Length: 253
Image 1 (tube, helix red, strand yellow):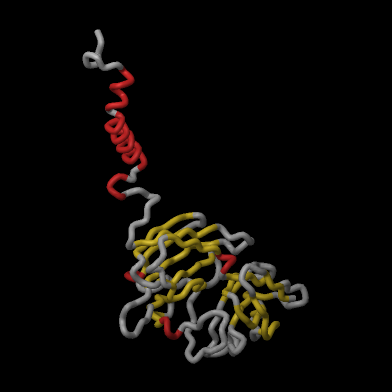
Image 2: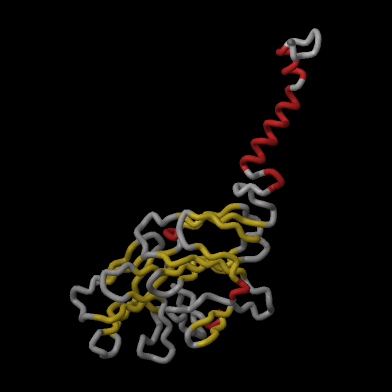
């Protein structure tokens, strides 16, 4: 039996219903990809930004996590860092790689970053995407598995962005202390060039390492290098001023 209407062949039937078939097909594709009703993982709404943390080109110290935190909107504009020694206002934390420091406070190694209410996202690996609201500037912190957290983007505006790629090589440089002519040490410390040293009251470490020939990641800038001998004697400054450039390695003899 002919299933098509009288005097209407298959070709004419398909042509006359092409729009209907197209709509059905488009609906199926949209539903299968999860993009119907605006829920696609590949789409970014007007009030959010998609951030991708790409794997570094150079070999970097192993990463523990990356934390994205929004900037406080209060008049004091402070972030609170929770540390083993108590809460420290962000205003007192020295910015790495600069010389103008009026007040300093250490960031403890085992610190948990900022007020939890300000954290927008935590990423535990590279080449991963995260979507966050773009209505507030952000701070981006990189936590090495060993050492101190590093602020790689500060007060960064994202209101006009839809996508953002972050590559560590563009923000951080590497330091390697050779140590062949140095005494055995228990720790290596990078500080600001005007820092009084690990044994003094106002000392602020910018980054640390447990031993020689370990890669140390810091922001671009100028640093002094200290070693703490393992015999308990006072810290020694082995470099007064080294320059660290993003994406490059500086070796200290």
